[in-house]
Image 1 (spheres, rainbow, N blue to C red):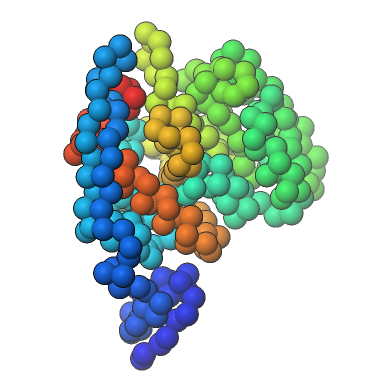
Image 2: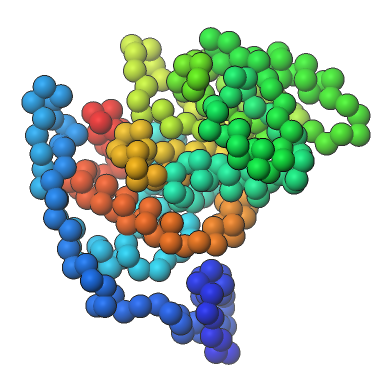
Amino acid sequence: MITFYRSARRRENRVLTPGVISLLAGKPNATTFPFTSFNFTARDPNSPPDAPKDISVNIEEDALAAGLQYGDTAGIPNLLRWLEGLQEKMHGRKVGEGWKICMGSGSQDLIYKVVQAMVNDGDPIFVESPVYAGVIPMFKTLHCEQIEIETDANGICADSLRKTLESWPAGKPKPKVLYTVPYGCNPTGMTATPERRKEVLKLAREYNFIILEDDPYYYVYYGPANRPPSYFTLEATEPTENGEPEVGRVVRFDSLSKILSAGMRIGWASGPEPLMTAIERHLFSLASHLVASASILVSIKTLHGISSGNIADVLDAL
């Protein structure tokens, strides 16, 4: 069967379908791209602040061809593999555990799409109080009823969350999601303790909701104490009542806006595979993801061949 597809998104969905030959209508020949290479200098992340050094970066035509071409909505495959290695290094999550990654134009872009994919018009959602002001307009756009949960210096008050759930009106659907910024929360500055995170995760399992872990400050965590484990880590290590962990309760949002370049708006979401697939269907504009993918190729090249195995040291240096 030979089928022509004019829509980039439909073409992408069909190209992997057995029995369908995709002629990739509309995919330009890379030799027609006007850019042949990028050459620039970047600050060496390993150089000391008082004696900064620059490194020369050269992006050749082959790498540009991948970054400037139509690609999968989720992101360039090699880039996704690199990010999977990063999540394994930093959060202990391995491929094959039922999660996947989706790229976006900043983490807020992805938060909006996740909520859009999960929440119906007018549904309630849990938000920590006070909540990051940047998400309020997107929740209002989706007509979400924001149910505020108290916080203190140790993070979300699990007791407040449990009381709200236990007193929830009969017949009214409970919230499907809880939005939280667990590290250096904006605007409170609090970082949730491991104990609070475990309590909140336990409630998520008990009352069947998903934690939206917005974590743009993860790589700018300072202080002598060990960095608390992420919700994304805890769901794969914290046992349930039967003694086994249960995954699929956390969608994690990472961002390079705070450590690389705010204007590039590069982010990625890591979460349950069915949900990430649903999000990809919302990403009907491939252009934003091509820009993000091309930008992060530049970013990886800037790190001068550093692998995901020691990226933590580089990000700490940044």
